[in-house]
Image (cartoon, rainbow, N blue to C red; front, side):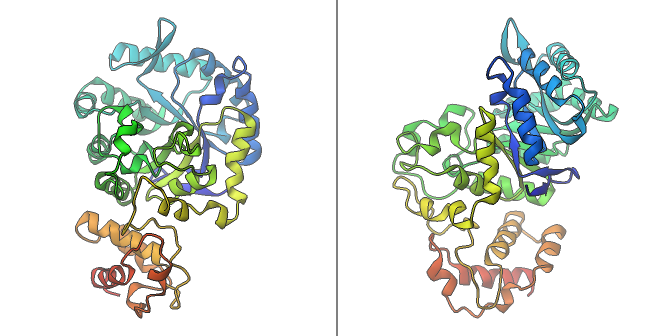
Length: 382
């Protein structure tokens, strides 16, 4: 298992994590099997968005004696009322729901406390200016929450939240279909068929800016819906009109800026093992570029996907990394210190480019790489 730093939190997390979808399977007995499997595979990060008290109790039992082996991403504002899940901003319900979760989990701290499911700007502003954020900050000050996060599907909301200065981790939906969709306060817009008809060309600029801003600010991204609820794995359901594999979806997400961990919504231990097998998969089987380039309903022409098909460079320039740092600088309108330092430690720089064009011939997306190298040389000075 490979591990990545989760933004500026200092947490080193497995790049494959667990969603909580399977914890309720088999009357919650699957939770223990999933945690046993995760420990064996080196998976150390999991999400717990559900408010189901039976699931909380099962997870608490499954973590007994090994709490320190896992980083827990738990959610505020996801409460259980009248026998069912409810998203709440009523502070009394939020406090009670969190207290009940902690009791059933048999833990005294949460590594990342997620403010749950914020897709509306008005909703976020009410949270930021009201008791919910104050409560999260209170919990962090007491050490009950180590880091504050936010879960969202809306890049506008996420951008405003991370710029507020309190959000350290962003849980966001990342996959090559949703990344084409403009911001919306209606979650269902991400998979409506009519939103994928004849007009989708390249990544939505607000989503690209969000990922690059997270990278620059040190906001770690934990990925949900990497498989689009399974739709991307089935050609008959995929909005792109073609299927991707599990490994291609995972690799796509892990190559986006700021992404630290993909939360696999496995319904069984065997499915979790299948997702973790990504770590041993040959690069050819991870490669999403040919599939994306051939999508019948979508075009990525001219957009660097950081897929490294441009390699090898005769001057040994890591073209994908140079391009990523170039895009980060462009998004900022300057060169942030962290971007400058990361660029500086590259073994070879854009100024070494001889414009031979070999990279452009290999690029599946017709990216103007020579021009990008020229711009990088001008921006970074070498």
